[in-house]
Image 1 (tube, rainbow, N blue to C red):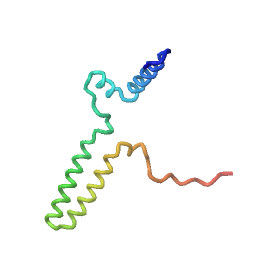
Image 2 (tube, rainbow, N blue to C red):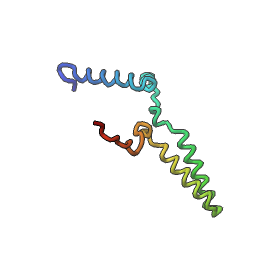
Image 3 (cartoon, rainbow, N blue to C red):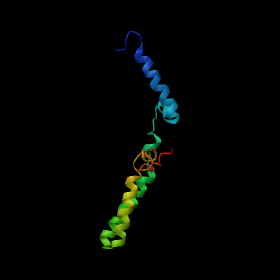
Image 4 (cartoon, rainbow, N blue to C red):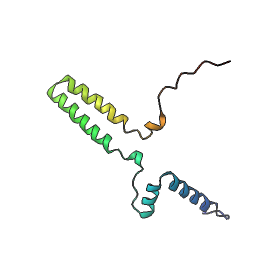
Length: 103
């Protein structure tokens, strides 16, 4: 139930304005009634790479060829890593080295 001062309406309008500011294409599609997942969750390339990796891996197992097996495993690792939606926001894994204090 909304509060007596309409604070729920204010919160909803604030959420709506942030959505329009952060992802206008998604907000427009949501208003039109046909929402799409945000861009970071649309990963066609990663799916194609994973399918290719699994095909290479399976053919390497069937043919008993070590190089195909290794290639399939490497490609599968690359594909799984590319499914992470926040991989660009994280930056490097290790922080840059600290510089010496200057006097």
